[in-house]
Image (cartoon, rainbow, N blue to C red; front, top):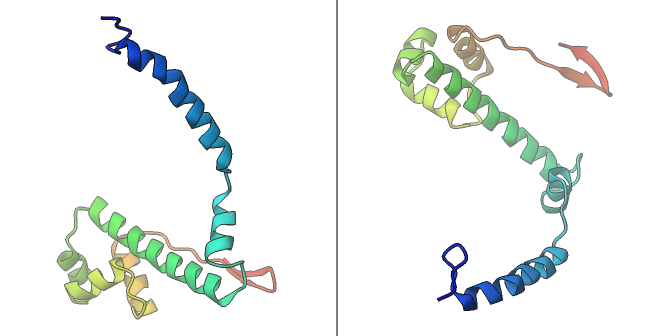
Length: 130
């Protein structure tokens, strides 16, 4: 029996064909940027659908940042809630991107986590707050 890295003779002879098939298949696919995919499937910047997507993404990232900071400080949701003065369920909602969390509560959460928060506000492409 012929062996090349545990391949049978027939497997060895069909391997180049598999590689050639992969090469042909690869030519059918085109690499595109993430921005291009988002533009195509969600909408271009400035459209209502794209704005809603980006706002939801920001809320999700905010929740993830809070959760990561809490876990790095070895705090439970209940312990963080006690520091902030809210119930565990409110911390859970914030971490899981519930949109109706009060801005004041979110700021208190970051303060309790000793996390620095900064904001960028732009109006007509000019930064007005940092």
